[in-house]
Length: 289
Image (cartoon, rainbow, N blue to C red; front, side, top):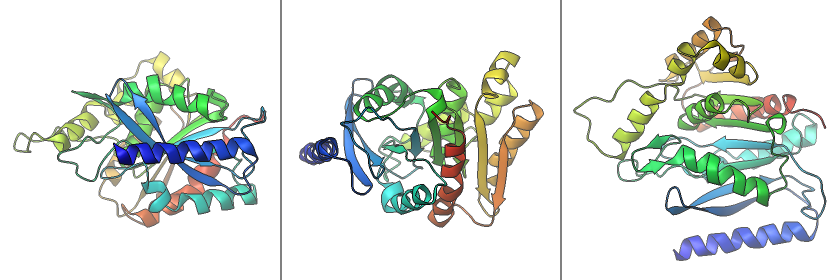
């Protein structure tokens, strides 16, 4: 509790500093949302671009950037070194100045603690994300908060989560980028221990992004066609087949998407380089106004 309190104070002090004057350089702040749905405080990191000024009416597009299994809200900053990449892309004009939100949805102890972005027995994370998290952060930070200025992306578990979120809410996102996405999963075996890892494995199976497209009616497909989709996976990645199946399902059902199979595997080196593709992709698909 003391750690949460200190982190929350840190987030508040950074936000207050941002309100006082435009940021001279970009910042990453740690903040939290108190969740009634989950019954706990959920941490998140927020990237604020250089020049962010809470005292002006100017608002920014937003990207929701999701982490993977075994990860936390800190991963993209500490392991993905996202700040340096975003700063470079904004400075070069390849990405618009943007607010990036990185919520916590996991823990390295996957057997005893919750991981995952879907609703599971006793842990309705998707409800939290859309009913509590998005409304709270888009009110607190200077975010335009509409489909034309909102994107979602993530790695591995977060790649599957971002894809399913954009499938369930195509009216809310202009684009979705999946990096090495955990887009499907076999039914977990009966011999697998019935712990939290079992539950998240079953949740991915039950929320298969591939099956969602394969079984969609025409009205749903028309909604999916309003989102720009991009699937990116390494040629040596152990879950490459899910990305290929996803792209083939989209192609069969007439939902346009982009596919990149690059040299690499399931690693931070791969996801770090993926940022240099995904962020300009999201930026190109924001409406200019």
